[in-house]
Amino acid sequence: MAVEIVMPKLGMAMKEGTVSVWNKQVGDFIEKGELIASINSEKIEMEIESPAEGVVLEIIVREGQGVPPGTVICYIGQAGEKIVEVERNLQTAKTEAAVAVTEVEQATPPIQAVTKDRVKISPVARKMAEAAGVDIEQIRGTGPGGRITKEDVLKAIEEFARTVHEVRDEEQSNNRLSHHRDSMQRLPVTGMRRVIAERMQSSLQTSAQLTLTMKVDVTDLIAMQKQAAETVHTHYETKLTITDFIARAVVLSLQQHKQMNSAYIDDHIHVFDAIHLGMAVALDKGLVVPVIRNAQNESLITLSKRIKEAAQRARQGLLSSDEMTGSTFTISNLGAYSVEHFTPILNPPEAGILGVGAAYDKPVYKGEELQRRTIMPLSLTFDHRVLDGAPAAAFLQAVKQYLEEPILMLL
Image 1: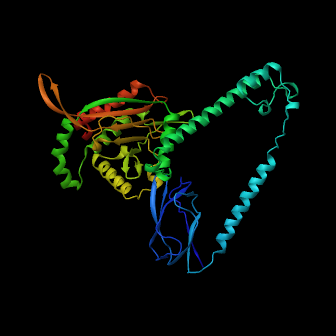
Image 2: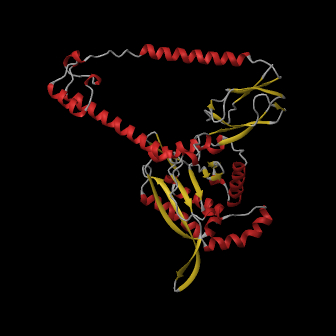
Image 3: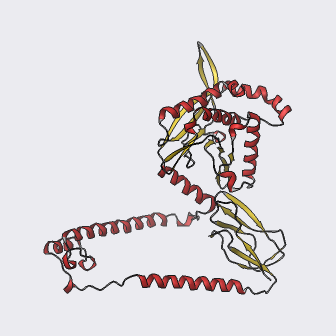
């Protein structure tokens, strides 16, 4: 009997999974435990192992196609084995689709033909239509007895002009693309990229985002990091990074400025006691944000270890959807890419996200003395519906203070 391979459910929030690549084709032999396909859902990607040995009899879901969890995506069985169930399901789907089309056609009222002799229209309206080149037979009158009025003609002229512009725009777009068809690759937006596209567009459309920038002198922080490196490695077998210190500074600042640790949901501002810190991690195919839950309960050392573990799991594709949902504030660091300033987009429904840029050396006066100092730019994007510029700036100043006086993070 043929073995079904179904689209797995990768998390409670998963609604659809997409087949990225089929490693085997129909007729290929496959061993039990061998990788048969790669799938993705939202921000999760994983590979599917064959549950049995046999031959790929039928591939139901093509590459790039999305289906709900539990859907059969292929069958494995013995060579020559027939799959009656597949044919029955396909026939049922075709029948249901045909019935649905028939019902729509029956529900759509027929359009009655209108001849010129029966068109009722005022003389003024007729002249306007003729001058604009609009066919009066295509205009539905709203006057008494279906008479076409001046307002009906004006509306028809507007619709006609809109249609002409749309056709012209489409022709221009096609003409532009025609010059690049030989060197153009058209890629479907699926899986992780589709989710990122939808969420980022929704974020900008549904929130009032404003970004504040501030420069931080991290010279003393870097010195303390280097001084503590050997002790930390000896006693805790880990390494403290600047990102770890930034995360700790953010957690402490959120405890002081609770309004930043909030979300705008259903016309209410939800202020959270627990701090679930999102740490953006860049992957080859997109971006994921693993969540460090209850970060306020962690010391600098344990917070550092949890951040490293989450980042490693993210790069290995081992994060579940539950590990990437529920954050209350996010940190995005592009310093490794030599980016100094950028405008991070809110991770909805959060009220704040901190962007960290690349540190650079700069001559700075400390009193009367000119010193070489290391400066790090920070960018805070916040939801203006939740809080105003002054409290957002106060939060950013708190982060700055912790980073410029790092001893405060250890007390």
